[in-house]
Image (cartoon, rainbow, N blue to C red; front, side):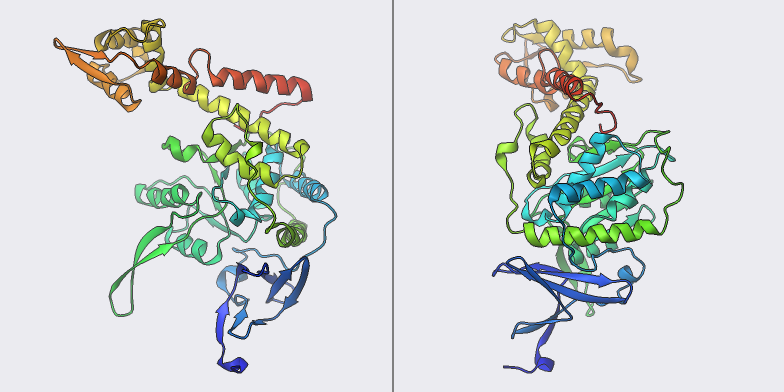
Length: 451
């Protein structure tokens, strides 16, 4: 066997081994030292390094710039906790001390923190977003809640995007990003690449690096992982928007919370991260997606992003507020669709067809009715060409006969599905609204706060 000095040194930040062992880097801020936690079959030990006979595994250096500036947060040691429910209660008390959020918003935030510590057991993840104007507390919420997440590293809109690719790829932690609204298109496009590709495994971002020999070397960056962002507005891409669970930050909700975070906040966050590290060591190999938790009232995308959150929660009592928030969010999404241009055009088509989808409908009639009902809402001219482009984008077939452009017949199933998706007529959106109101009456609380 080679001597220790002959072994290759491998820096390990975190690893799940084939034999069931879990290795995690920890950092002791009081000693300014890093170490490795090695856990197997429920037994954890802290070592300075790990010799497996083939390589010498070592933690990341404590002098790492991200660690020194507290831009990257580790746990310091695994600490016992009695029960997941009690752990959630301790995290809830911590959040309430420093951030004012609705009950359902806190429930979603707690589930997301828990998910971040075992996220690598899932193939898809949602993102968590705090949205509001300045002074509403979104940056405070980001800092307080982000400090509990797994290997959280903090960045802001003032950061260039390139190092974020490298940090995500190297540390595989939770991106906590403040002021995610960008003024410049190129910066926004780079961030959108991370958000578009970072919620599912198997979609790395390819970037070209220049080698010391001045050669161009393509490299794949893994950017999969949990992400929490704070921003004032929304993104224009509906597909990207559908990946977010958004907590709306309301003015005037900060009463009772300190104006400035005390030093104790960092200590409390570290204590909770230590218990959450133990949670990871215990649950990482057993947690898995539970498809039976899917809700038939929710759209497929909403179920996709919700299932990982529900799967890490211990019981139906802790899952119910998250479900209620998802139903409220879906209702808002469908309401927004209904008032969009696509939704308005669909409503006109539905009115003109009056249930007779197999009858040809001239595009000219749709355009005239749309202009009469919604034309004053638009600064642009309403033309048949534009209305036709909207219908084609929705997958509605058009054809030309005798010089007249007409909606093709036999599209009743397609139109019915679109009406449901856009909340027109007997829609899923109205069902969601009724379900949310019923839930409010039953539990005597409001879902206001997460949208």
